[in-house]
Image 1 (cartoon, rainbow, N blue to C red):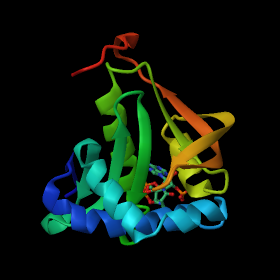
Image 2: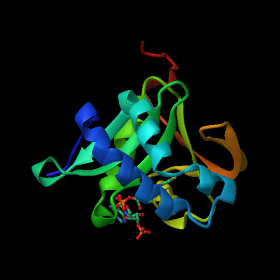
Image 3: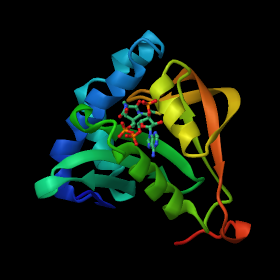
Image 4: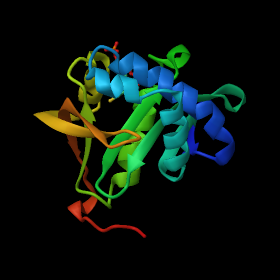
Length: 169
Ligand SMILES: CC(C)(COP(=O)(O)OP(=O)(O)OC[C@H]1O[C@@H](n2cnc3c(N)ncnc32)[C@H](O)[C@@H]1OP(=O)(O)O)[C@@H](O)C(=O)NCCC(=O)NCCS
């Protein structure tokens, strides 16, 4: 049975390498070399820790971690979505995406995310879940020393439930 729950400190050593491997699968060959160089194992360890408070994880049998989603609560951004290779194609990514939408609903009118043009699998999944492509933008991807400009597409999903933009503390 799959469960989506907030990440716990004990998850972090598992999350960082899962996230890194999935990130490479989705981005290698689709982002500037400068970003690849900046995304070594330590980047993911540091950021898994930094974002722990806004991360949801999907777990399967015996609590095994299958994937993660990182939420940008300030502006309704789905910051990162990653599913372990062994668990793809079984709806884990979709469940994490819906959990992110549920979390934002009532706080943000619209959720958004950036996806590199070459990540066709992720783009198909977003479209399947009702997200729409609003076209290309430049995303400033954070690195240890600054940011790298990455050409991406901005996807959005309108969230119902009153359309207010009330922020929770
Ligand atoms: C993108 C990613 C998160 C998707 O995770 P996943 O668990 O495989 O996703 P799901 O199983 O929910 O959906 C994947 C597939 O099922 C399809 N799907 C999901 N639910 C479906 C349903 N009810 N009926 C029909 N198709 C469905 C999706 O469109 C997609 O199909 P396709 O890849 O054959 O075109 C995963 O591949 C991943 O981690 N990739 C590497 C990292 C990455 O690219 N992250 C996104 C960065 S923006």
